[in-house]
Length: 587
Ligand code: DGT
Ligand code: CA
Ligand code: CA
Ligand code: ZN
Image (cartoon, rainbow, N blue to C red):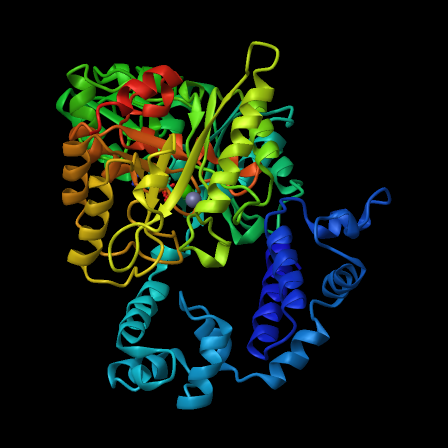
């Protein structure tokens, strides 16, 4: 069994236990185990067979779970799951895949309406039978209908970029140890930094294709070989991810890298530009149209490097993040390609949580981790009191945290040179009825205020937009956090008029966030580009809930690059003094 299959078994056990109203700690143990295993590139079978290691070395895997993993590896089945399946209706699991329908809600629908399939649930919503069930109502019923459509859409089954990145880094590292491989690069949507990835594409420069493919087949992450040919092999890796590997000769490597980086739309435009110049481009190189097809090796006018390919059609090299078939070729032609923001430009992180609310690490740990990452300033922005699930801060607890931050800043500066400045921040919530969850006299004392919308996401477009615009108009609100609320693969954005939000932000000098969490990436590339055009400063923030979360900054930077953002468009590339000058433009 692969890791992803084992993770899926544990997730299913957790769902079914929860459905039965099982012990919450037991449910959580299975969920955590599924999470750990799902994120592991190395196969569990390898860990188990290594004499120097034990399955129980893995985070959240105790003796009991280790035993169950061994049973799964040996037999491919888990008696506990088989037993649970006999106790829970077959449809329950299918229904739990609908975003927003947890095990408890599903149980209620099954028990009261006898729902036995996704189709039956859809039907019941249409016939308005769900709104009558206790705890549901008309709004929830409408949301379920939307979410069934969302769950059925294959576009929502793609892997998050950050997870795909872990897999491709492992495979690139492995392939670079192959003696016959001279250059090894990742291509496709991963290289373009798309928020989700369908499959992974790898291009290898070698004259010994068979040896390269043999090496690929020995990759520890390999689950199955799907297809092996002379120049291309496709395999299945961890979490069912497909990987396509192509082997080309050195003189074609740049052409292949360009071709397989795509996007398809970008390539179509590039080819048509080539044709206008009497040239043809394919994965082997750029040739004159007059030469007989297929062109013989060696007569290409470009192919070795990507820059050569673009140069052959009179263009500068275009960064992969911009190759989506928009106006990047026209901009390149005019010499107007942006100089894209880079991770190294980022000097501060202005959205993060601590153990005071729903973070996993303490204030001191978060700040230490930020120093280790070379940041010059951070804002601590725990939740305001409305977020009761996260034990959101009321006035008293917030002021107490700010005292702690004062003392921390003092101690950091005790030798006269502080490595970092910690800003006193808060993530206030926009209330369902309008307004914020902490009063202005408290916000006036903050260095940095993020306002976010977590509740009442089903409200109609004009209500949601009005709530956000009202927050923007609050003189103390500096930035709107994750402005559309989308969660990739899980939940669509709430219905909001982004043009009105961008407009209000521009008018008031309020910033908009690019939330770097790989599930969010919100604003997305297009909205970020629109905000830039309107002159709204963007802030790329991790919204970290642990020290590891701080490393997600790179995902946000990638999204910003896709939106064509330059260093100057991103407020947290500035020094703290310059950031404060920019903040002073509001109100
Ligand atoms: P994905 O895998 O769905 O996230 O997206 P991509 O862009 O990685 O697409 P993929 O893996 O099908 O192909 C990788 C690149 O190869 C693609 O961006 C452009 C190029 N390519 C593949 N098939 C074709 C094709 O039939 N025509 C053209 N023009 N380009 C193609
Ligand atoms: Ca791909
Ligand atoms: Ca592919
Ligand atoms: Zn947050």
